[in-house]
Image (cartoon, rainbow, N blue to C red; front, side):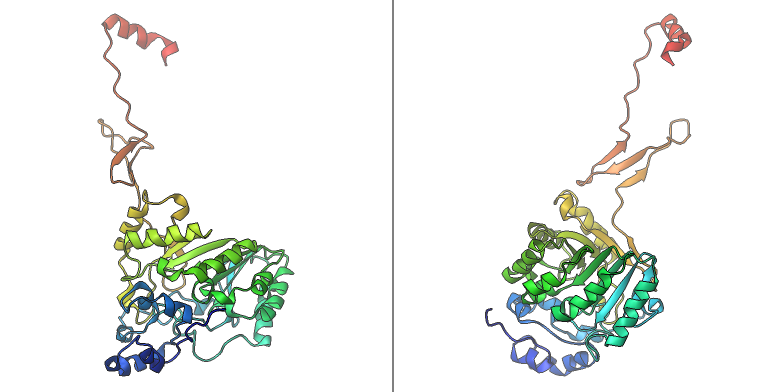
Length: 377
């Protein structure tokens, strides 16, 4: 294992490593009092300059102190759906299991930034058992989604018994992990960790990454180890102003992911987390970006653009529409199941395609004969 820079966790370390300047130190201290700071050595190595897509994601700025009226401490509404500590049960057939409240890095746009980082680490044993008991008691739960905090910073020795407990629950058919670890702290993806994920119940890993610059050689190796261990990989990405809000940036990321056997899954519109307004695009901007990707990259590179509705009302697709109702007929009546479709290059087409009008009959006699012949109906 190569010698990497040590993880940065304090404003003083940010200053010592040239990621902030002396003038901004008091302001960044105020940010760090509210929101946790951590940048792994791997991510430090991926930063080329202070205005690049990696630095923007992890280096705190004074803009985080600006809170707009629409922003919320719990932007997607986890709290009302938390029946026991460590469980969020918003959808009938699946729930979130949050055994860990720490992350290897702290994204400056995180929608759980108010609750991850400070204070507790992992759930206590009694709390974890209560969470597992909740899952056991709810037979409608088909899928358990590990999130947090980042669940893959749990040591394999501690992860194994949790996986065994879930594997033993008959109605749990799928286990999913949402994690940044394979990209931001790839050396944690050891053979022991991969083995801990090897249960009879299928395990899927959803990797959070937002720009191809994050995915260095170490990250590629971690993804390869997971893939070779039989773990199917998806990705989720947050649309971020100044990070990936161009067709070229998204194309580069999604091509890089697919080339590393990761299927792009979700492109999230930025949540209304407090102090993150400088990262959010408009929905119209996001739709235009997704529209411009269509035709540039294959279907394997296309995620679903989604909005998590504030207040706990769930995710919905918000991508652009390519379909409009067809025109009315000449007599003013509707045309039935007809549409106008816009192709990836902006050209509009009728569906079904319009059929050319039939040629006029040669004679009145022929026309009359045709009209009376039942075989032509």
